[in-house]
Length: 540
Image 1 (spheres, rainbow, N blue to C red):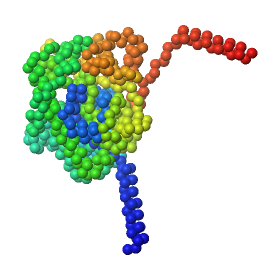
Image 2 (image 1 turned 180 degrees about the vertical axis):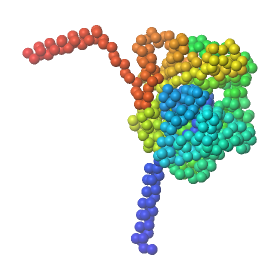
Image 3 (image 1 turned 30 degrees about the vertical axis):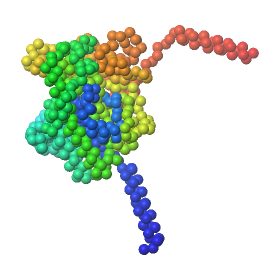
């Protein structure tokens, strides 16, 4: 072989390597989205997931001001899938009647959810876990209904469980029992995801893994049953405090709690943390699999929750003495974890940008180089994932909304007949009511950060909290801000705009037209005449 041939061979190798590296750099990224269930941020919900914080948060960016648009499972998940506020996707609660995976929702919203766009773009799409609370219901197509856009489908029938559940696997029923090695749901999701990755799926791919943790019934894996044995629920902030200046449902709570109630509360708190340890194992395995297959550098991994949570045992305890659930306008139910790692994201960075769950769908689409459709209310976060933040959105306000569930009668609680209550526990402590219907804005102008809420009840009740100085929302300042005409007009006008916004208008708050100031007008005219006369004298 001549020197020329050796030189030619080396040059060809360099050219081929350059082309391969260029192609890899230009390759459309893969996306993994891990969604937990009822994982709070305010009450320590991210403390047990150390591996997740290390492998995603520390290797990427943590968004510290991430909010869900509604604090209830099915409406929140529907908003994530569609990129739309509840008032636009119309999934208002966890029932079929409330459009939770109803035929009407499937025909109008599901067909335009983000997976359909990814699939048409050529993404291989994989789902495993909890989808929507009424998915699999016979009135909504049963297990045979596979939502459009998913190449591989492993959807839970109904609400979160850890054992004794049914999956729809590409439209075929798969039943699971109570054997840990075969049936523990978080581990089943983990194994199905591993099988998908080991099958060398065509790239790019989108993978969504929706775990049951840390939702009731709070069943930890057996190896984690004794962890956190000394941990207690936080006793600070609004814990065991009566919300005397809050809306009607909160004022019904009874304070203080009994000691045995506190002990039971601590056991629930510990079990919620224990269920999250299996999620932590799943994240570790996923990152390990992606690394081994050389995919990690071209894969975005998102981690978040569908809503927050406040802990209780049903006997008037917990935050503002509420029964355990979500559904409330306070920070512990709407402020949730959000972290992401991936191409172009500097490890160990944080963001104070105001972002929200309806931003996820347009973000996924923009990563896939798909222009988000105009009917999505959210904004793509892709510009904010890099340090440059070129053309990053400058959002000042988010909308939070909830439509309270209610029934005419509550079995075992005759005192609530005709009171429009719902989700009442054995002690007749109710989690929801018709007049727990509200809309809120969170945000503020320069140097401000507050929450303003308006309830649809016979009191026209309002709540306002300065979140810079009152992080636990102990003092409702709504009566005070009514004396500040400018501020009160601004917050009410902003809320009124957002509750009816759609598409791009949801990120544009209209400016108020300034009223004519008569004194200022006269002063301007006088100044103009004076300057005109002065200029005439100067001419001469």
